[in-house]
Image 1 (cartoon, one colour):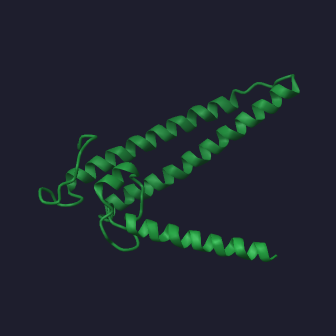
Image 2 (tube, one colour):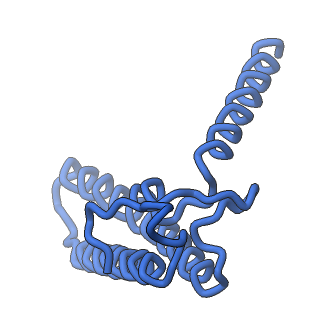
Image 3 (cartoon, rainbow, N blue to C red):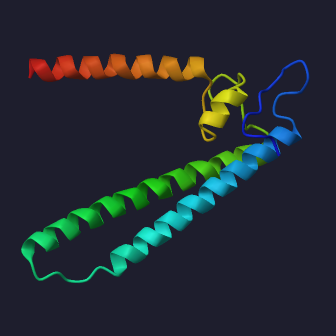
Length: 143
């Protein structure tokens, strides 16, 4: 297992060696377990909600339930991303940009273990998205 402050040294280690893969696999499994536990607890909260007599209390409870369900949906989406990352580890693809095949980098993976793209590709995608958003905004303004 790699320590939390582990820094990758290209000269000392091969990129995505077994030690690194084991580290990220463990992090992903722990993250998934935490998300599943959180969703389970939130679901229990929603199920145990009692009927409030006061309309204000009911509205507040409904709002809280909505937020809880949104959090559960996000946790489910993250769990899917985690499962895909675990599959990439099995397939020998983890740590490499899905688009370019370049190394994503240990630091980037530590910050976001489910990331699919190297920083250059992510920036390119964000620029492209911004461009499309600007085009859409211009089109909407014309209407």
